[in-house]
Amino acid sequence: MTTASALDSTPPFRADFAPEDADLVKRMLAETRLSPDAESRIDAKATDYIQTMRATRSGLGGVEDFMREFGLTTREGLAMMVLAEALLRVPDAATADKLIEDKLAAAKFGEGDGMKSDTWLVSASSWALGVTSRLLHPGDTPDTILASLVKRLGMPAVRTATKQAMRLLGHQFVLGETISKALSRASGQEPKGYRFSYDMLGEGARTQDDADRYFRSYAAAIESIGKAAGDKPLPDRPGISVKLSALHPRYEATKGKRVETELLPKVLDLVKMARGYNLNFTIDAEEADRLEISLDLIAAIVAHPVLDGWDGFGLAVQAYQKRGREVIDWLIDLARLHNRRLMVRLVKGAYWDTEVKRAQERGLADYPVFSRKAATDLSYLACARRMLAARDVLYPQFATHNALTVAQIQEMAGNQGGYEFQRLHGMGESLYKSVVERDGFPCRVYAPVGGHKDLLAYLVRRLLENGANSSFVSIVGDASIPVGQMLQRPGDILEGGDRARNGSIPRPEGLYGSSRANSAGLELGHAAERQQLLAGMAAVGLPLARHARWFPATRPLALRVRCARPSTAAWSSGK
Image (cartoon, rainbow, N blue to C red; front, side, top):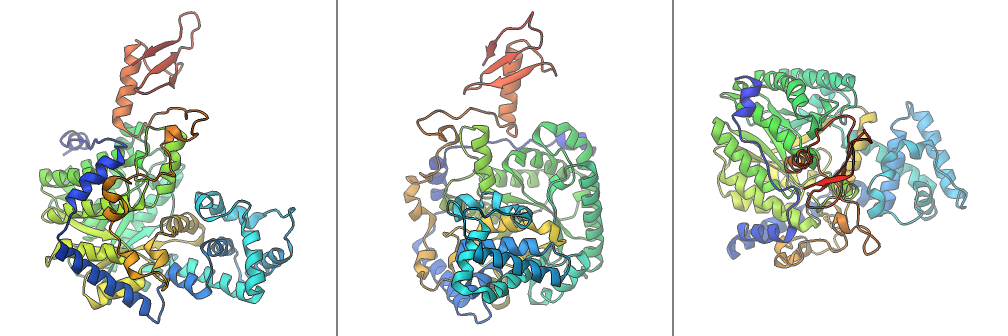
């Protein structure tokens, strides 16, 4: 089957980009309702996991361990991580020690208003991301926070903590700087019941040279993983996670035809390599405006003969997207249409801050993600239920560090197998010691591989994803928080759908309150809006050309068109 015929044979995924939260929540509550006996079993299992985690003497692992050991607040821990990330770029230990001394001395004595950040803060650009809106106070910088910390703990203690943060960043969150080192580290965990999905660190390609370099990196990694994989059958084999945006510099919804022509053959080449070694090949989820173009590409791969008789191909689905359930339903239909069994990794999502900010900047009607974490948790359960009911064509992979979610999945799955859990390397270690090593459930570790220069963006996503004070990861180590508080169900928090939205987050159009309406924009990542745009252009009788400028005005979509030729142009509108 050719690429074109593969695409033509499969109905594309299309769904509302940002439906109303309350309607979705009420439907999901009805879908996920369990019996009182089932809820009691979930409570008992989750309580057991939490109590075991809190009783462990070896620590919780990763970020949880670091925060508990040094007794830092979230904002102090973040400042320490920022300094540590800068230190990771220092080539030798002696220089690193001098930098620590210099920054801690500045933090101790530089308390005046004239303090200014230097290259280490610029290097640690995470401070400029959405972290500040949730974790920091007005006027906070790493310098001011470290100054307070030095006063409270003393410079030697902070120096020790910083070095510990460096070790965590370099060792706890990256399995290895090279794939060979990562494979060596993983070999000690595989006998305990862990599988691995290797992620070659690096963000989206900006140039064709970037894309070619990432392709070579993925190809080399597949070769190395395959040679070390042993002879176990799927799903008990390692795999690789691939970012499509790393393989093409213009991976955008408006470049669909170009992506089809240039990117799809490259992805198929990697899929063929993975199949040759019978590995799990997973396409990672990215931003909401890339969902449709990603699924178009995935549909072409699923329809391609390379998947005949092989169950190793899969993708990640984000539950915080309001379209999550529709994606699962579409994947089930796609798998049945082409007689496939797909491996599907269900995640809650790691780009929430980005999605909210983008919707506000673009002046969209609403957000593509839920504005309350409890709604995301509910969506996760609704997606999980669909996946478990379709185990004949899906192999569900549940990525979570939440003991309650693990217990809920186990209850919904019953005594049947045919699924696995997943966790991030460096997180959830104490939970999965019980889940995997005691209870015997399989777990795949999402394992980043790469040098320190590629660590920052990945680390910041993890901090944003798990740093909220409502996050299970943040509170499980705090013995003062009762277990019952961590067992609250989404339905109780959302009050049956009456509190489906976060009242502190206005819709994008109401971002400025009563002062003015936000400018109304378009979401070109949504096919329906693109088609409406083209229809509006056709309605005024003007073709899309390089000399025309198009300005979105109001909703429903209206266009104001200004032509380049003043003699023939006038302001006109089309609906």
